Image (cartoon, rainbow, N blue to C red; front, side, top):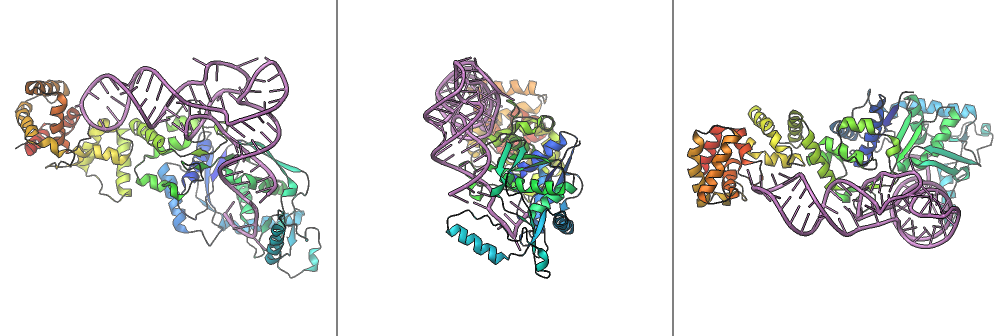
Length: 464
RNA sequence: GGCCCGUUCGUCUAUCGGUUAGGACACCAGGUUUUCAACCUGGGAAGAGGGGUUCGACUCCCCUACGGGCUGCCA
């Protein structure tokens, strides 16, 4: 049996980090098994669903590199099919027409709660004769078993059992003829051939009722896998006050998608002691059995560490491409061809020193800036009289040097020795002149990347 | 309130009855160093509590505590 998974967000806002991880798990599971990963937009709540939200979700998935098979399916578009199934349940006797009004039900609930009881509404129409109300509006309720128990075999949580008596007969079709989410999910999952339902823990309780719909229709129940939710650093449910909860926020802050994927994959899932891995490894290793049972907290420090590792592992050209996208996404000017060229040559010296793109860009300043190089506040003090004099005596020696690290190194170390100072003292003004920054790659690497002419020109700019 | 789920270092986790309870991030100390990043060495740091079962429990069972989820003609 070929694996089919899906991600089914409701388009009521941005792509939440928790949703992103759910999508990632589904994607990983399907992609690692040559299966399909489908996308369904649960837009049946017409009040809250917006096309902007749908676009934001697709954009977030795309940025994360989670590609889906086929077009995104609109749940709302399937409403007729859902209604047909509800009526079929009626025909099969696994559902019935309920003429109780919402007011009656609300009143019942209020009374039960006031009496300190748990309000399970038992419709009086379950076994009544519907022909007594030929023209009255009705909702269709599923006829759920009243006794016994229902068990869910969950790939993460194990066997979960519930007493059927605690469940009421859920509505599957509203009195206005529209289907309810609980029915729509089951019908859609069945129609789309979904074999594995991997979703948040918050749906675990829903699975019981959904499983009853599968049973009523004689459909094959998918493999359930309810994964624990993500919590904020304080252990509470992740919310806006914890800072970034939208994947778009992370993109804008310059975290690499590969790092996000790696971190999110490892959050709540493990493969022995492996912490940093490639996408191929993630796909090959990912399995439902490695998913933990308790909620995990977001740890930004570890996220950054993993991102740093992923930047270091990335191909130079791919990194440059991502930086271009980052610049565009944050509304900044794209790199010129000349800047891209220098950036590419500088990349080997940059990618091991940065955890995020802004950090990498900052360290790439020497390659991106053009003369005259204006030192920032931290670098400027190095270009005092002493510093400038050092540069003045150094410049002529570079004029005819062979432009390779092996020959530049003795020149600089000898120069420092001649001045009776440590190399660090010489490197500071050099760094300030070449980059205008204090955090940069090695001075040798910078000189080699920008070349002799540019190096000497910058030194002369700083110490005329 | 009821039902369901969970609980190993600060955090993410390994362990699937027998380990000095391992790794990673973070932290502390030392080293290296050309800034940043990195790197090397060392260190502190955990089985929520209580009962069982067992020769032996982090591991299996029960209770309590705490945390979370659900409890709609929302999704």
